[in-house]
Length: 117
Image 1 (tube, rainbow, N blue to C red):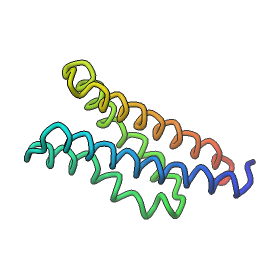
Image 2 (image 1 turned 180 degrees about the vertical axis):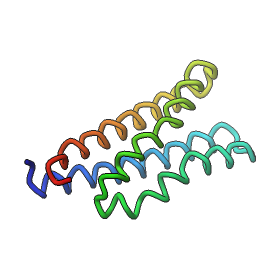
Image 3 (image 1 turned 45 degrees about the vertical axis):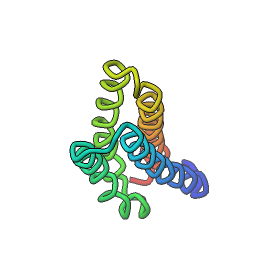
Image 4 (image 1 turned 30 degrees about the vertical axis):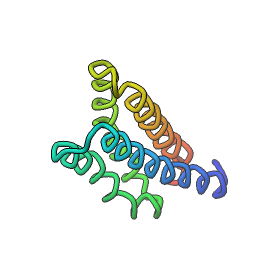
C-alpha cells in the first residue's frame, strides 16, 4: 500500500503529461500548416482528455482506466505520421513518447491505488 503523497505525485504527473500532450499536439499541427482537418483532429484527440480532467483531479480509478484507452488514438496518429511524413517525424516522435509516458503513468496510478478500490 502506497502513501497518499505518492498517489498525489502520480496524479500530478498524469495531469501534467496530459497538458504536455495537448500542447505538443497543437504546436505540432500549427507548425505544419494549420487547416480545418487539423482542427478536427485536435478536437477529436483532445476532447476525451479534457472531459476526463475533473475526474482525474478527483482521483477516480475508473476514469484512469478508460483514459488509458483514450491515449490509443494519439499513439496511432503519431506512429503513422512518424512513418509516413518525414517532415513531421520529430514532432510525431515527441508526441509518441509523451503519449506512451501518459499511458505508463495511467497504469502506474492504477497499480499504486489497487488496494484502495
